[in-house]
Image (cartoon, rainbow, N blue to C red; front, side):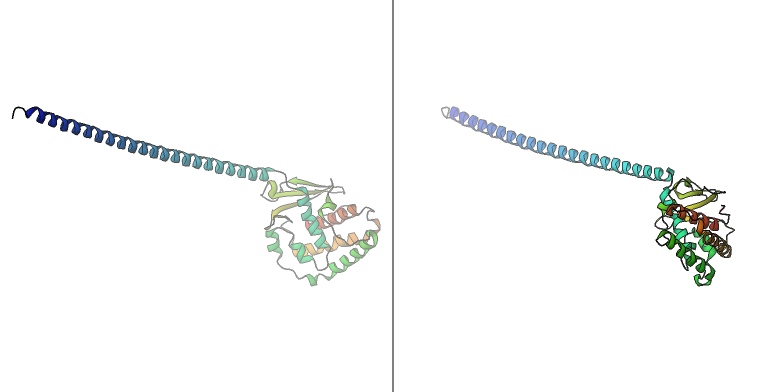
Amino acid sequence: MKSIAPFVLLAVGGVALVGCDRNSQTSSTTDNATNSAQHAADKTTDAVNDAAHATGQAVDNAAAKASDMAQKASDTVNNSVNSAPDPTAVRRGLAVATDDALTNNGFSSLIKDFDEASRTRFGSPVDSSFTDLNQLIAAIQTAWKDKYNESFDIGAANLNDSTYAVQAGASNVTATGTDAATLVISGGSSTISVPLVKQHLLQYWKIVPPTSLTAEKLHQNLAKELTAIRDSQANWPGDKDSAYRLVARHIAAAIMDTSAGS
């Protein structure tokens, strides 16, 4: 039996060593797995953090861009409001009114060239009732075509002159900047100031006549000024643009209930 003991001890020791090696291998494998898992977790965390950072940066950039756009839009609006009104657009307001005043049955169209409050005050006049105006208009149209070889057709370009100066703001309206303007007509014995406001969906300039002006009074004023235009045809300027400005001055006087001067 004593001779067997050493072999037993060796066998047991061998088993123990094998067990230790297996335990060491198992531990190493577990550590490797744990490390791999940790590395994977770290990479995932890093990826999440990177994504979050990128997302946050993108949001910040988008917010910054939106803020810049809003500021630019605000600056554009402010610059528009504070800038001087477009002279051509303002002069067009009177040119359109003058053309309507020189059109057969154009009385109601002329009313539409006024600001909203004035249009409401004037109501809807019947054009066919202004036969005296139509007769004067026909006479002027005929004489105009004979002298200038074209039909009467005034535009803003015909009023592009220093005697039709455009100023920002108007004394009888509260709007300022591009919302209100005054067309100051000089060159005669008196100066006529025509206030206009920017109204309508398309932002047209509309004339603001005095609140004392009624449809009846406008009718009387137009008859007076159209008669003056017709009776002075022998003295109409040779230059067509000057003649257009002369007629527009008379129509402005009728609308503003003042004298056209000489």
